[in-house]
Length: 253
Length: 253
Image (tube, rainbow over all chains, first blue to last red; front, side, top):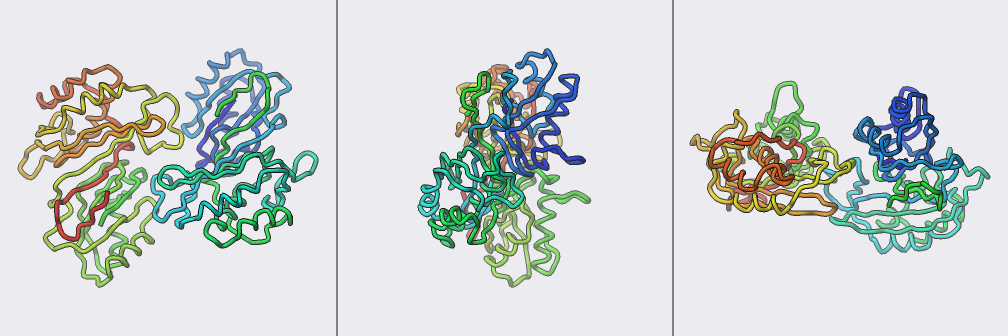
């Protein structure tokens, strides 16, 4: 299934005792619908406050409910902060986490003075202007095989092979209406906090505190040479997960 | 001063004992800044959950703080749901309520299936499609002198002369990105719940449950001949208050 959610009220994706989590809410509703306990596997965790437009999750069930009926029931029973966009049957070998080929994250920020009054919790209100040209210079050199260790948090999980190298496929800045910025990153994988730390450094580049070349230097050095802010969770959206050509896996933009 | 606020967390504009209100928050901060109790007069009340982009409020103070410094201090001390957009000195005769010439209200609705996940509390998610042509037909005949009694709530206050007649100056529908609708109404005054009741009837027109001509018929009859839904508070925004040519009154769009 493909899930959108507002991460604001949740302690992240992953089930934690005594906390409200997205996985916990989805599993609780699915257990009611399927009449048996259900373990849901997400494409990956999202941290507390991080949103999703296209989180993908898979589960096994003995239920005879048709996918379209289950989707409607999920939409009716899930809390309003979670919206199930699609659901379909997939081969048993499919696993929402292990079958991932690539992911796209969007980070929304608002580099302007003034309040993001009606977008609080939806983006990073920077309250200062950034130079888009400089940020684009830094983004332009990101695609390719990169060791993401410099921007990962210390407790990030490496891949199954212990590697922190991923292939960055897309790194772009789009300027939307009213000066809203979207930084879009697509890679074969992300380590914990990479997008938020990277966006924090990109903001430094944008206000002139860091040269665009500092980003590839830090990637090469394997550590964040210039301490910078981690951008807040509320600007981050898991936009899409790619699985190649698995039959039955919904393709949603 | 011109105030923007997210009405969601407030029990409306007006001070009420034991409740969190916009007026209450503003008066508390001004009392700290001015070193004396301050009574703030708004251009009018907004109900619980109703937002403002351009609420205007006036107050008298003995403080020597320059307006620009007071504005910055207000921005720093008010809660994040209230943003003071402008503040300036005005003649003593000016009164934010009694000097009003006209007001513009915007109502945002989303006539589409699917969730307004990231705009919850910011608009009315109708979950059904509306016919813009029909709604525009109904809006086109609104401007002019109208008795608004039909769409006012029973406990609405009439004007100081007891009249429920106002001049509607503007009534339009604008379609924004992703199918977002904005219904904009400007009038020399509004009675309580007029915009929300009117938008509720306009939605009925849009889905074919009511002829466009029913709206002027109801205005003429002085009552809502066809019971319909009142649209929710969360879609309503006090956009702008007009005061003519009062010197010093900030003109913000």
